[in-house]
Image (tube, rainbow, N blue to C red; front, top):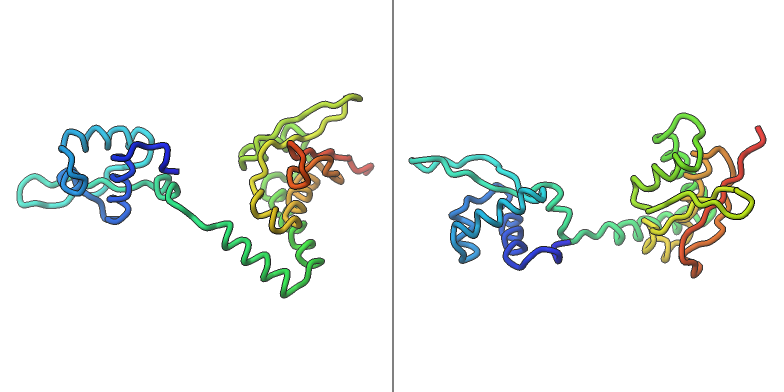
Length: 205
């Protein structure tokens, strides 16, 4: 989010958001009521952080002006309402198809995600790698008896799952398909747990 940036840098990014074709240093200095030197300093910092890039040049009759524009990463820092759309879609699917069909759909989506990631069964360590790539902050944890469990400290669908607990079935199907077995949800943040804890039981075949 933009809150981690200073006020002037936030204003600069907002100005560029309103001008998708880009703005010159002079444009930004006028819009923000700061000096050209200050604009250059802020642009250098924002370029370094991957939030601003150099775009096209604009003819002026003299020396062309370099324009600066937002990167895609910067655009994602502005508010998005993906959870709102996801909530509406899930509620609509449940209303049209029923809860059982929604449950089957979530499991199917989890298996599809797994098939896109791996073409063979993998162990818990590899599953955790995929989960961390998606933002779960997961790790393999060994309990007494030496049986590994997968512990996730962040639920990437938390707000969505609070409204629609069936979303957890996607996680279970994903882990189960990757690991080639049934998964038990030993602890869940939605049920008051500190983490989400998964135990993978291997199929006999």
